Image (cartoon, rainbow, N blue to C red; front, top):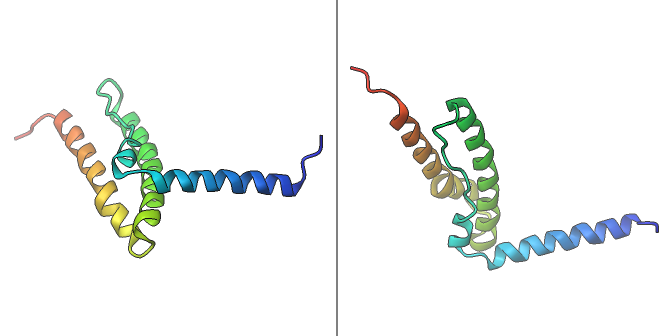
Length: 104
């Protein structure tokens, strides 16, 4: 069986339409459920930071896609930063601070 460029194009277009439809139907609560990072005190700080960075990048991409579909493209970078990304960074920073010994 031969697969043509046209077949590949149709498949990719179908996948993208399906993803777009998923984001169109998604609620803000559904979007929030896409945050999967859990700080693991058993791991090194560096390992936690690495995982946090990866999860944050994935989450930010989902948030941007959702925001574009529900609230348009204008100021989307700022909306995603302020509403979704910065709260996760603050939460992570609090978790890191909680592990640090208090110095006087």
